[in-house]
Image 1: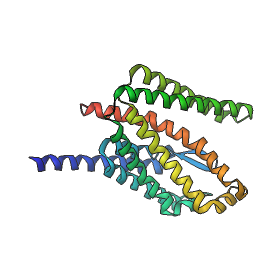
Image 2: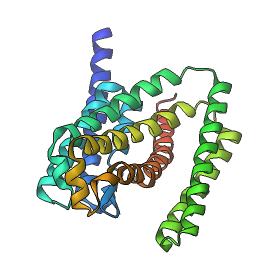
Image 3: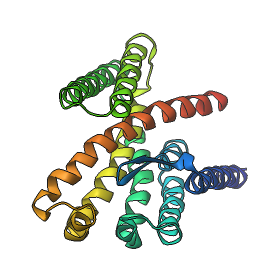
Image 4: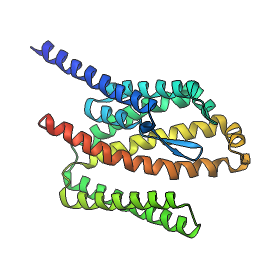
Length: 252
């Protein structure tokens, strides 16, 4: 009886890993997987990895992350761009992607059984910080006469964040565990990929984008902010919706 139960759980994990891994590959082979932001591509490919980690734990999350990483390496080789050389290194293309699944899984496990009121307060604070940051960024971009697309995107992200704050305040039960896992999982990808670029390829990267090496920290931090934060917010929105629907379907 126990063996059958264990086998059925394992089979479910294999199916989920295969399905989300397939979604990751499809995203990597279509425009849906990448959002061009200047010389860096913002990605949605990490979202299935986060979902896998939350729903099925660290092993499945890491497995889907591995698929994501291999897809990144494959894309860098077969569809090279100006900075594709950085993704030839598995420390940048693969390892951070595996860490996404691990971080998402363990953050979710750590938070899911915590006090509900505390989680709700923490989620409210998190969204207030995001809203304040986006409002500051929008105001700064308006003053610097940024292009219309950037301003519209910032405005959209700000509106979505305000809605999520309202949803948190009015309706949320224990969603902060999902929110935090999605946000930190996404930022794991951003921080480790861009951190790896800074530590290993800073000079070559700066030469490629035509800026002096002295500006490496500022340039990469700028990408972390302008690309990483929107990616993380998008991850929170999509992941929360998908995971809540899946858990509801399982009767949880």
